[in-house]
Length: 419
Image (cartoon, rainbow, N blue to C red; front, side, top):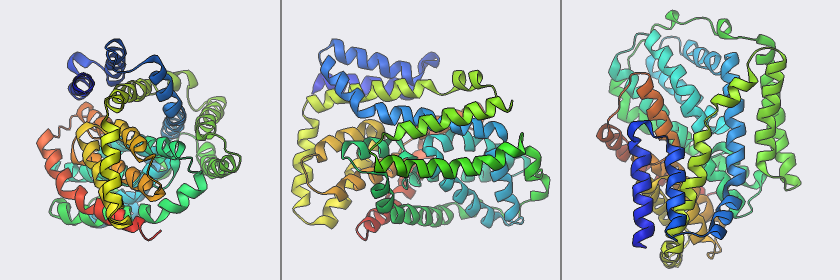
């Protein structure tokens, strides 16, 4: 346990620190090699981890490629400007609309897509609107929170969703039906709590006339109109694939590549450049960190968690759901949600309560918002902001996350009991 914990801790420290520009995927792979050399994991374990995460990883690549192409044609910028214009200059309404937009983007293009694509667009628009620095930070903190808290409704909305759905053999339709209410509750409660906490930084009036007209940012209006039809078609494909037990990555990656090909043929984007600039480091991060964490499983962490979760289940479904969600949340905040979801899935495999699998997802999606290193989406979000000249300190973020996350998490977990 000591060696496994040491390898994991050092790997996570370097992932967060990123000395001399060392990228997160490279660090995770180095950690995985160290775990293998030190005997913390075996080659068989590596194959086991690959079987668990391959579908989620390929699906993520597809979703990001699709998001990047849509970004190229002006899809997200059109949505952001349209959202701002609809507020008619009311700062509080614009705050709500921006979070609703973030919720939809996170649901359809995953939390990492929302962090990578939507964040720089919203930041640019807020600077055009001449908002005060404190107001910009408030909007950014709220947007960063909603990107994870709203990543619940579809299997593809978060890597943690895909891993858990695959592990427990939960179909796309069954998953969506169960998570529909928690998603709505999470979005509404998140907006309410965020408004209460940040309302003093929200201006009463915003000069939306400073923004361009939405249609002016579109690179190809024909492809833009077609994209709405394509997204609806792709969603239908997920349900069809569910009926035939096809992997979700077949549609996520396939859809992303097909749309990239269409955009390339219409000379709207450069396919080779998109593929080259896709965040491949996330792939290595996913596989590498999962291998490192599997060492903790071998050291007995999952057995201990199973014992605790079984004991809590004896007190009834309500206690079990809330406890599972908060254990997953705390672990995610401390050691990142990607390894946590796998550890918790393994620990829950001997407990016959499907509701706990969903509680684990909710905990792993919301819990990481308590620390800056809790989720990959937050790490990407902070990196994007740093590149744009916005610095949010560890304590500034943690103070905000610890204040907002627990009440939202509790209410969303309770909503799961009514499904």
